[in-house]
Amino acid sequence: MAEDDFIEETLKFDVDYQTFEIDVNSITRIGLENLLTTIQYIIIMENNQNFNQLEYLKNQLKYLGFGEDEKLHQDLESGIETNEKKFEIKAKTDKALPWNVVDFTLKFSKSEQGGVFFNSFDATLSSDKKDPITQNFKVTKDNTFTAKEAVNLLEGRSVKIEFVNPKTELKEDAFVKLNLKEEKNEFGNYNYQTFYKNYGVDVPKIIEKSNLIFEKPEWKDDTIRSLEKGNIVKVKFQLEDKLIEGKAFLNPQYKTLNLYDNNMNRINTNKPLQGLEQEYAHEKGKIRQQSNSRSI
Image (cartoon, rainbow, N blue to C red; front, side, top):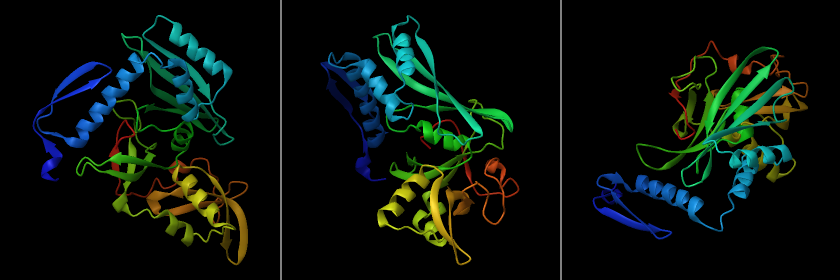
């Protein structure tokens, strides 16, 4: 790390007429910047008279994929108006596979100054084929899984994230997947299997090896972005001199695409999609386990 990445001084800064002093001796500059951003974010939310808290939270729910349902907004408003310091509201999604049902419990808290914060959400996947599974996802300013990404993780697929490497203090990309085969950790969550950049997951190369066919170049870019989010995408691919229309999702652990026909039967194996999180239970990957937040 460069010498000027560390500073030894007392830093003063002002936000909305409030002065803060922080002893930054031996704190990394990036870590300090993150701290200041968080403090500024909280102060602006709580003290800006032009800030519409209800509308902000509605937009937050919208952009995280929980929708704009009237009942959702009514429940949110009721929670804000209650005297309780914490409250929860329920939400549903239609983005799961047909045989799965995913329900959300959105968790909010209030500060002494009257600020309301969306802290985390529980996502629970239920089906007739197995016991329900639940994971808690933290909501932070920079690193938050969307509702659809949470569904994808619970259904056993991988999602691309951005995280700050603690060794280099630089942002990097990685793919994460819930380890649903093992017991939950001390935080009550499943650990993440993490595939870092040096693991060598090259999505364009994987697509090329899978013989996917795109009629327009931009469709390839859209497919890459969707696969990286853990989505199941409609694809056309060449197999034994035949053009097949089917579906696919990314499998970073084995650097490949899982290909299915339109009835969701695995190509070449005729294996149905459900239960895919146990598909490679007999194989061991060199995967680092992570715990309870998106920030790896």
